[in-house]
Amino acid sequence: MITKDLVLDLPFADGGTSRFTDTVTGKVGKWNNTPITGWDSRLGTYMDLNGSNQDGVLNLTGKQVALQQVTIEIIHRADSVSQYKRVFHVGVTADRTHSIEFDDGWGYVFNAGWSGGGGSWSIPKPAVGDIDHFFWTYDWGSTANNPIIYKNGISQTVTVRAAPSGTANNDYTKLTIGSELSTGQYWDGRIYLC
Image (tube, rainbow, N blue to C red; front, side, top):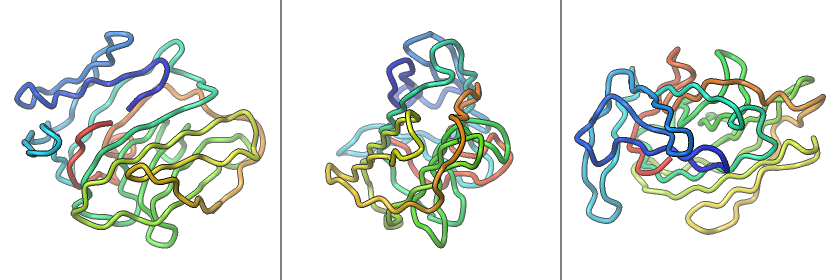
């Protein structure tokens, strides 16, 4: 995951340690039920999350909280695209600054927090087993803004599912990779880069 003030160095090449590091601040996050690491001849090492109890949690601080803009880069292979499976979540249970998840009716969804009602936008779900590169960017400067999303270098048509209202609700301090704050919706698949 890449933002101006957060670059995660996930433990892809170190044999599956239970920690990962934000290389900007040096803060260390922790994997719960450490995922298995593996090797892909095209992309190198990856973490393989089991979809039932594995995720990583990092407490955000300083400039990482209340971002005006966020950019997320993810390379992954989904083993399941079931309802609400989350590749990442920033926020608390049932409320978030932003998250990316699958939705059976909407597709692959980006959510952004707003005080009067969060925004949700979607693109079609990726196919199970495909390795895809996603690049998502969003600006909380206006409720009229839509995220810009690229899949494998191609700009995607974004569908507005819920228009945001109010003021930006982007000040949560907990980042979870692979679930909704360790309470469920666990990601099932490989993450090569996040």
